[in-house]
Length: 159
Ligand SMILES: Nc1ccn([C@H]2C[C@H](O)[C@@H](COP(=O)(O)O)O2)c(=O)n1
Ligand SMILES: [Zn+2]
Image (cartoon, rainbow, N blue to C red; front, side, top):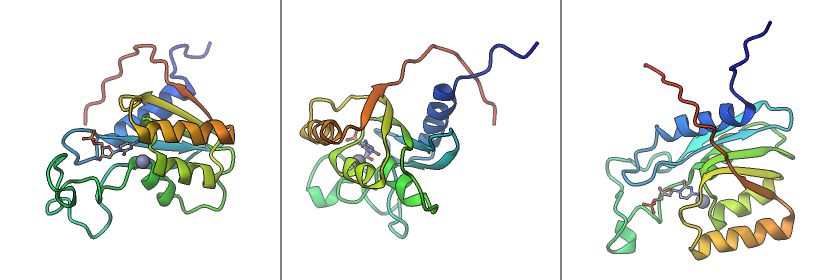
């Protein structure tokens, strides 16, 4: 008889998004993303970080102050990185697993790439206009989104 306690597709891909977030240098919010084809093949992964060539030791990780001296103008979001990291030709019908609901800017790229479903872990910025605008575009384009439902399985990885 086959092993019964294997992880689901959702656990597998959200697990990879969560693990990818561990690469982030952002001290307040680490975000990870995993893009998966219709037939459950991983196409790409990403996490939030400074663009290539913009040193994450030199660019600011501050949240407040002069906007030019905060992270917000510079950091590349996890979803954007996952989309840009993909070198293949075809992303139509793909699913995006992401640890934080996409912002409006990433949503534009998600739409243009033909991603058809978003599975997210946290929606902690639901009350911001960036998230409201993202949902407005997703609703208009028929891209579905659903909150990941954890089943509280604990898996420990020793590295
Ligand atoms: N969907 C998102 C939203 C935000 N991010 C990144 C951008 C920042 O590095 C961080 C949010 O920082 P906070 O304002 O919580 O200090 O998360 C992303 O990658 N994807
Ligand atoms: Zn974004």
